[in-house]
Image 1: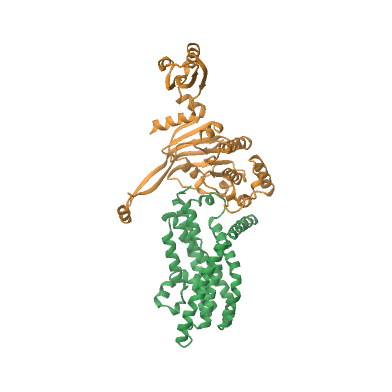
Image 2: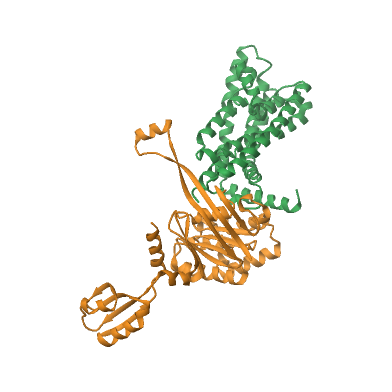
Length: 270
Length: 325
């Protein structure tokens, strides 16, 4: 990217960040909503795991708390939701403002969501201290420290996977105009097949089988598993490889849908 | 030099028919009749460098759809268009840097931020050098008299102030082609006048090619030497505004006020009576007869005042649309 382009996209990020700071209350409320995962699910699993002798399928209390705490981190910082914003802009015709300008719309949307995540992250910081304490209290995750580089890499690769799937869902608005149903299916299936409700080892095996054929598992469950449990190196490498394949496939798919969608765009409301 | 060339451009929209009522809504879950409408139907025209052309038509005539195709927002169903040598819907960055579109009903400014933030954003997007940016903002803000509101949140501005800011945002990169879609809509008469003066001055100074749509005939009369009239997606007239009047108007309007009551029968021989009251009358008189009839009225009737006017452009255009339908 040239210096000029860097400046261009940095300014977009800065202006969107300014705009998001105007609506910091919105970001704060959604951050709290994502914390609910930690407030409910771990305690249900503590009860079940303790009743089963302290471990089920390799998952103990310590791993479970780390899993859900990092789920909140992932939701607040990594997993972007451009679909609603894109759908709104296409539906309202505001999208026209972007297609006439010499910049990449998808990159703009990415920066838009990044700026929003930054505000969410700032709101999340005060909650990090009690969450770190909770991890320490329940035994911590020191055992996974040697796989830290893989955890960071898997988390970074999770970002484009989830972003591209969400962007494709947003693009359905080119055809559906009101893509609310598509978005709801996406939210439900990303939760279920991404492992947001529980690790796959604690769920019916059929879910894992279906999830393995979908990208959500590699955007949510895979990085969470790496941070919660010790994982054999071969499995980590295989997971990272699958993440890269998903990124490439989703990139190609989103490019095709984008080109076809632009031809369908009817600029209604403008 | 031709800047805009449009050949046989057509845009068809598809839509679904649904009868009103709950039963029809249930039926539409299983079967919907798909229909097509031609928003733009095989139009061709060209625009020379520096021209300011008025694009006129009633609601749904196809004006905005044409502008959207020329700015690359929409793909056409068929036909060709070249603007500055580029096919608009290919969305080449080099083309995007050379044109701008301003839509009176919608905005590109960031609603919750001061207009200056949107300007800075556009500066970077269009890669405008710092010095040019500063000079353009200063010059345009001065011309539009909005220097003091550039740091105010856009949502707190009046519609007129917002439109002026929209114009600055669109002109920062000094586009060679400018599409203005209803730039004066909703503005009060003073703001409309200011906007018109600005567009005229800008066109004259910068030689920017401008395609303007408007419902206000004052805009067209003040700004455009040439007009394109469009209805049901088809061009009905393309030519000089003066020629339009020559072609479609065969009479002038005489408004006469009298010092004493005048009978309707005393006026009939001079022309077609459009309005008649004892002390006032409005007549349509053939252009060739105007001088003779006005002289006769002045000598034979108790005239207090007499006015000879051209037929309003609005009326001529209404006549064309009515004939077309």
